[in-house]
Image 1 (cartoon, rainbow, N blue to C red):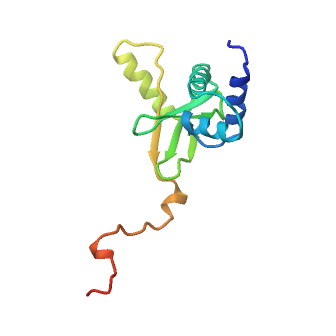
Image 2 (cartoon, one colour):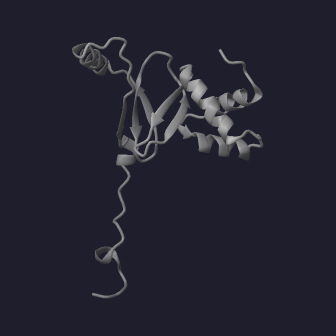
Length: 144
């Protein structure tokens, strides 16, 4: 167990105030804006340590960036994430759990661990009408 340094406490307290997933860079920017002098490398190291201890959830975006959020539940769970707004819902996945154990066993593996993030569009974002893309068919300049 790592000792609670001032920097570690500051990252932890910042995460406690946030509901949504944030990147290390976003957390660092927020903390600097609030007057903390913590370095970006320290934020990365602290987040990795918190993730290793199971104290934060980590999502990998489609482009490979890691996003962090304080765990709402201590037991194993998965995430359903909105591609538009980033809202994340923690979900149970008993079918996924059974599938992972089965696939592992069929290849002679034990102690299977996994992470599952499902990406889609939440109901609130889906309800917002999309704007037409700019282009000749949608441009009105008075020409017929």
